Length: 224
Image 1 (cartoon, rainbow, N blue to C red):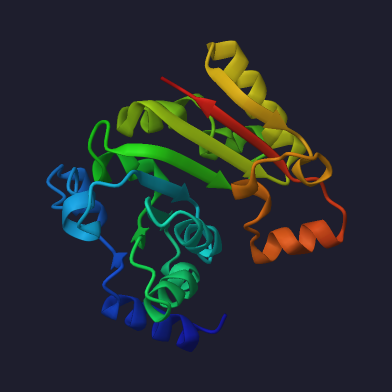
Image 2: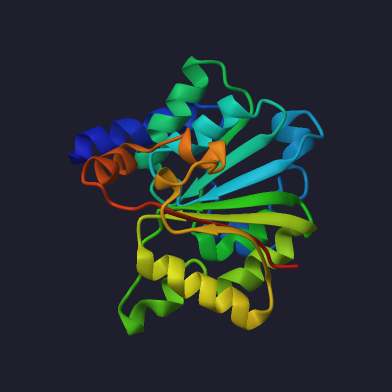
């Protein structure tokens, strides 16, 4: 994407009511104005609050919001020029239960209050296979501890990935930590009865993986 195009998208993001872009300092200071208030101030309801981490173009966030009008969804990514597409679609189609937050996932506990979140989706994250990159793996112990802080006691976690490595690593970790795995499948499109929220919403890249007959894996689990 050219820098002109990026700038145009950044500018347009600033005009969208469904895009929130706090600075790092704003979050770390611990006084972010929406922390603990996302339902009341952004969505104006008491519906469950669901996050998608590393939301990319926002296709999954928007897809889930359309499918579940009685839940609120927030796509999180540091790349605003990417989720511009999802934010714009939500504005154009009047999808009021989808919003986007531009921040690093490491700062998630500064953006949300304890017990504020009902569910977290991690969709097609970079598996960070090299050993030196494990600290960036979104299902490592440090990240799970962050999620635990903001999730309600019975909050759900979802991992959907095309990486057999990420699937296996996460399952092993969850079992080792004694967390509850509710559902696990290493090829959701080949098994009858797979959860519809997993198979009925597809990202652009997911479609490409499926065309190449690449297996898509899914785990639903609890960490409290």
